[in-house]
Image 1: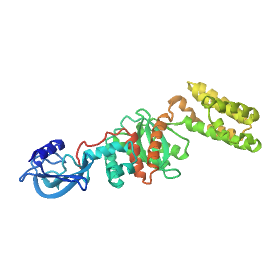
Image 2: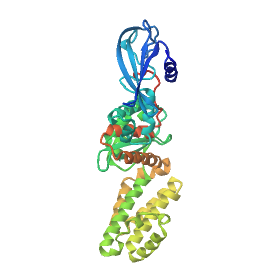
Image 3: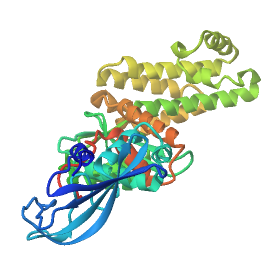
Image 4: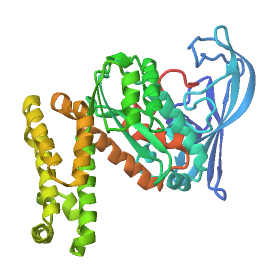
Length: 411
């Protein structure tokens, strides 16, 4: 073995019985090829159970794409032995740098996983000159393995939210651990079945649906039914941001109705949806002027601010219950049909809305995770493959240990 082969052998961590047989550099193709072999009569440790002294029964030539050597592609070639293990049987040996059924070294795969957190996969594929399908196989395999090792034995408080793969396309339901502030499950759909799938997944991670004591969600009928059926010990908190969102929709309905009578309201939508302290100086002046022009809309806006103040300032359940019931009486007498309709909705979901003043669970955690998910979608310009989208949700938000190279490389 010459000096170059010795240096590359040390850099790659090649140890007997493997050795570097030859190195070829193709400048025209821009490729470095490192050929490895093993000594005649060598015995190998089983890469599945670690049994030593396994005999070689046959060989097969295998190739792995490695990290670039400067700007040049680098490939490792090995006359790979089939080994006979007493416990595991006859199987193809997997070297330390590789993974079963992968044409890439683990270091190359780790490099792809690192880039995937910052770049669209299509851009990575162009950078490393590989088809994006092969890169998705890397990401999906490592995410699946790392996710399988997650432990949910202490999971008690869960937030549920949904997001679309692309605008107007299929939905994914995302389940968040309120305590650890990380994604614990994601699945296609936004119906009761998604919560059933979540409950069924928990035992695979030392978790139990009966251990979940609190869940926050929007007021989706499907989510409510799914939670009651599959999370028997969980109290439901309807997320305050979703509640206020529905009130904002009622305010906007009042604006649209009044705009038919008073065209000056046209273009003022966002003024009424924002709180006064979030308005620009011009918007504050416009709000003051428009409020004088339309008393109904001004009253609806004040009702919204008062409703938000209940969430913002009240610190105990009894006081919140008193304030909420007073507000509902005001709403019913308001003679504003969208507000009255909203009040009816609050009454029909009263227990879950008021549970906030006991659990104090909000969508803040879910929204934080969701903002990262939106960034994933923005970078990729949407996802056609829903499984790839779910893998990226886990990669970004599940706090996975990656690359997941522990245990058998055949996993």
